[in-house]
Image (cartoon, rainbow, N blue to C red):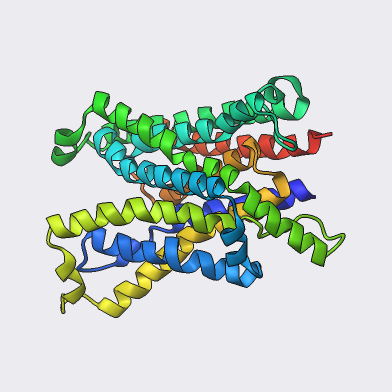
Length: 358
């Protein structure tokens, strides 16, 4: 039952991540940097401590009493994750949406799920599995099979995207000018690796989550693991993410002289503010529910794979629902449907792996 509940929580988180950008598309009269940093205030600064305040009594004390090394590494990985998010846009620019997204999300999935296992193989820690676990234990082998199947699904979705570009007349003039496969792959690899740092940040900040979990279990004996234990860790990770994004957006606001967007009388300020707030809050909810799923499945490869798989699944499913694939050839449409079905299959395999644990 824990495995099924964990998968459901990861689905909700993936749905939030795959849908958060929709409100941004309704923002009128503001530049990207003007709306992104305002939405980020909700994503990274306002909503995380509010969520922690609602779920973890004394969360500021937990952060204040954490070791400096824990806070430093957690913040650092948040900083690096923020760079990964910013370079995501460059990867998509140079490779195109389909190929760029597939490469970046695929790499983030692989690195985010397996790199911690390499670390714990050489630095054995109670409750953590080394990389050997995924090649010797039935549950670990099942996770690896699910990961491989998901990579195939990502490949199919990426291939469908490239076929779509051909079906609809290839790249537009502006996109052709930006397209650069070599540079795009380099940026995509950097983005994919650094985007996985959010999972590393969760690992680094685990001592804070464990304190929250211990305190909650003492107050609620016999009720299992604390669903919201990671909410305290997110605060520090997202401080790092905010730092990266704030510096970049501030640079763009100065360079492009777009601070004036907020004073633009032709732009609906209140409506735009509400849309940014909704988008930013929805974005945060992906990790709020990720933490709930992690409390049921554990912050191992399974949780990160499910999280990324659901994001990819929902993003591509939205494309089908919104008829973005209308007018393409049958082979192209079959490719995107096959990719979605394959990713769904991988989710089932990874979820099933939890039931094999001894």
